[in-house]
Length: 566
Ligand code: ISL
Ligand code: CA
Image 1 (cartoon, rainbow, N blue to C red):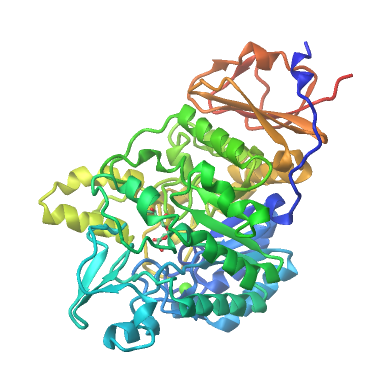
Image 2 (image 1 turned 90 degrees about the vertical axis):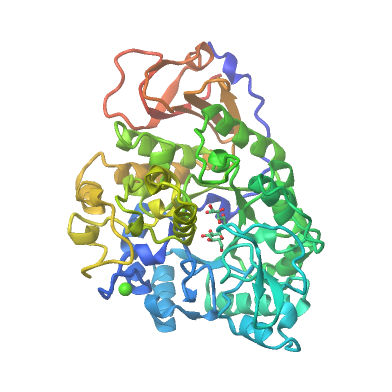
């Protein structure tokens, strides 16, 4: 009966840290809350909602970029790192937000976007206008086009600039020239800017495309049919990457008790510890994309493929094994760059609430710091925009243009956009059933709301006992009350199942069993799991107990504590 108690209980070797125990909540400021009725979310809007966030139980708020920017890529193209975007408010507004957040025990981390700047940044302006400018070498200028690199947002990554008769590198849009980290002054400028925010009391950074800051200076040719391969083998993990990160750690990060979370694009499990092993003194954690990129077919992100639970499980298993008790990851299932998690990994039609709750259970019981994206806590879904004119994201807009130019049938593109566009995650937060979901009092907002706000909104969730929101609160509290869910080891059952994700988290403080059914069907639990006796149920997403024993219902999520036996 108790054969599964044979797990050898070892002393936990994983070091404790507040940022491992924390739950992160990502805010996309322009879509969170509009305080002044201009149709764009803003900083004061966030301040208004701090009590809501506190009540949800999250600890750290990651704000997508709030800095001055011409907004070519929604603020990921920064023209002044130390100024606030006018649309979002003022520096006083930000100081007030930080102050209020701290008063409530919430931390705030900012988006550090230093692989590139905006082309409207004064460094680039000077660099472009004068070949002898001290800023010339802040970017990559070449007389001839060095290679065939492609940009993430379509087209070539080397752009010819007539003003200065040379090519510059931009891995993202033309308005996002890549910074040359080889230049020591660039690095010093970045570190100084980081100190500026940290001295203000900011609690850390999420670091945008950080694996790309060191470039292979021969810019090797890529296979243009394999963009994913180009990212993994050529664009990321350049020769001086770890040297730069150690330097940043030494000069900046190590001076504060803060969170550093790298966007782990292109990082494979075996490289995880190079970034996050504490002994190496670089970053605390990274979030890898391996489970998110499953739909990147040959043609890139716009070639959606189905994902498989066995791949998903294998990815987390491999990361877990590779990191061991050293490095650390952030876990996430969506953010502002991806479709909504309930639409992608759950079933947003027949089991929206159950599957949204299941996904929350997963993130709150996996090893890694969970990072939730705004709106997931009420089960917000992808949006089915009827017209391509409703898209705002540069990636989607460029794709639409490309289709138009090649006489592609836009009707064919529509269902793809509805599935993969980043705008799925960028529609306004749904606070109530009022106009624009209570996000704004403006007649029109910068992007249309998802019409399902009439049903899916915070207010309705607050007043319904079994809502997704209330479940989120319980799942987050569960993680906080049981540190084994943070630090414990990880053991899986039924690895080959395409429907069931069943695992155990355990250490000398406790032993937990997590059962998740990722399917619309009822399943029998494997014998080895049924044999685990004497358990206490801590969390479940169905109201009533199942009448049959040993089965798990569609999208059912269960967390048990396994009682110690003697
Ligand atoms: O969303 C993607 C493209 O389909 C991702 O590949 C994304 O471009 C990549 O993860 C980098 O993301 C970050 O940097 C970009 C910015 O557009 C994203 O919003 C940001 O998260 C450039 O700064
Ligand atoms: Ca506003």
